[in-house]
Image (tube, rainbow, N blue to C red; front, side):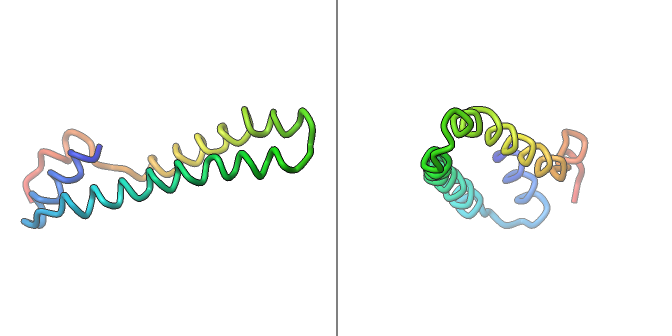
Length: 86
């Protein structure tokens, strides 16, 4: 998706912004890598017993996946649109 978005943007704007796209992607990836263990630690520190493990291992990842699916529903760059001329 990232290379497709970069190519589409360059074709439509005439600007080469690969660095900006890559920086945002890297920042989001690093934030997720930092916040995931933090969320896990917070859930397990609630002293909820086995329920905390269920939350950490099943419910929170399921909620995150559902949120990701909702966010990706707005991604409209398909093959046909990526080949259109500006």
